[in-house]
Length: 309
Image 1 (tube, one colour):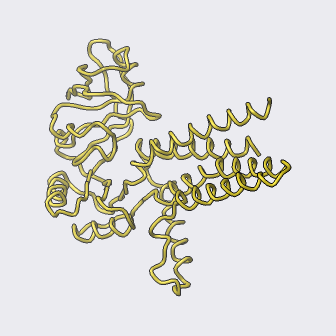
Image 2 (cartoon, one colour):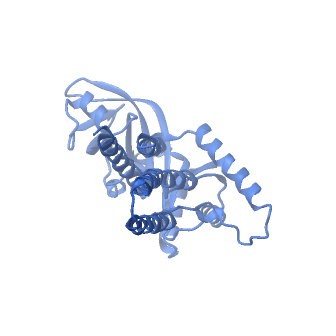
Image 3 (cartoon, one colour):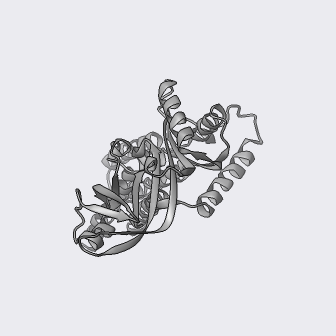
């Protein structure tokens, strides 16, 4: 009986891991570039327009963070310190459901916890929040680990963007495509991408079904009779199919020539620099949510496998 409850608990953990990984996968397909030289609002708008017209399907969103900004509600008298995120371009890359933000001047999106503090409710659509002498109408709220507000950069004439997020219509080597974007727009910067981390987590999700298959195989092996080999063979085929069909290998981990023996050393150095940059650079609320989701998926996935060992 105890074994049955362990399997049920492990299955529940596995489903949680799949849910977390599925939720962060679209964000993991987005590349972030921390620019060496800040880009002003006019130049950012020009680049966004050019990328939309060149037919390559590249979505762009420039952004800039300002921490420690005080916002308040005049009606309730409540105030809060948040991180303000100025944007130019496709804000869907940063927060789903905000595609109209660029066209809604005087608008913002606010995290639900800050909304509850200012207005007494996490559903604050239509409420007005103030920052200094500028007002913003809240168009929507969202759950977040970090207190922050997103608003269009055109309302701040001095906005100079320190980063941009990119999403490409085609998969493949995201880092290579990001570097091409920088070259054709005469920009320089450090590329941060989560391809390897997301692939690693996706592969960790295979731990639970693999361990479960092994346990079932051992259980069948203990049974007597020749008929046990039929379900064991079917289980083995199913396991191999599951692993072969779902094992995730990033495109940049595959060398163009197998005789290129220096490829792996170069790849590892590049990935190590990428991981260090993730840890050292200003991650922002978007990266924070992504990393939390990846950690949750890893913990749930590995936990499910360990529970039935």
